[in-house]
Length: 238
Ligand SMILES: Cc1ncc(COP(=O)(O)O)c(C=O)c1O
Image (cartoon, rainbow, N blue to C red; front, side, top):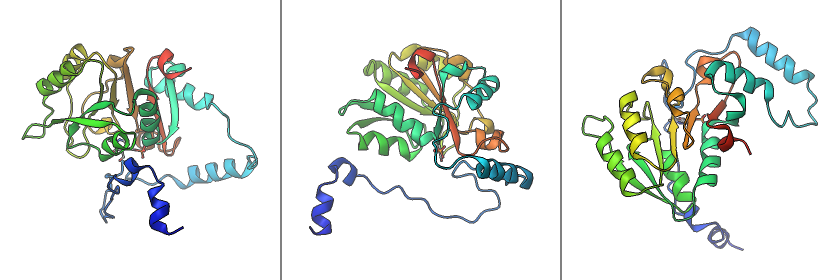
């Protein structure tokens, strides 16, 4: 079989996606991939290396990382059974979208925003209803509210602070959106330590899931590439 023929066997929705592209950049402080600007202390690296060396390599790690979840629970104030730990928030997004999307779902997304939302939604056969940011790059809260009212029970994805614009949603704006919205909200707060407010307390709502990618920065000594999704227990644990 020729390569082109083999490629026709790949899901067309995936073939139609544009490649996710990232320019390599040399900068003093590199934040565009949500990395910690400071390297880890050598002592911590050694401790981790030692831990890995003494673990059995023939076995999977614990199926549920209870100790990590307990610590995350102390840190976030979310009960540990409402926390899912994953391998990066892209994985968390994938899992959530698998659970919440049908092939023809229309997902409400602001633009410009983190490209992965659109790629995943399109790859799963959904389409995006776009709400554009205002000319000054702020969220258009009225337009978001109109969009969710026009599509009751739809899935809404918001990113605050937004990648790539840094726009943030105020608590008041988020409250208005939650009042208007009857579907699920995924709020990506990967960059919340850089601005905006931490919406976790506000999101103790049955239909909201909050994504965090901050443990690499906040706890560089404790976690690497560890991201969480928190929500109400009945939603996130089954
Ligand atoms: C807004 C936003 N969410 C999520 C991610 C994904 O992060 P992770 O590396 O944890 O998958 C990124 C990475 O750039 C991001 O900018």
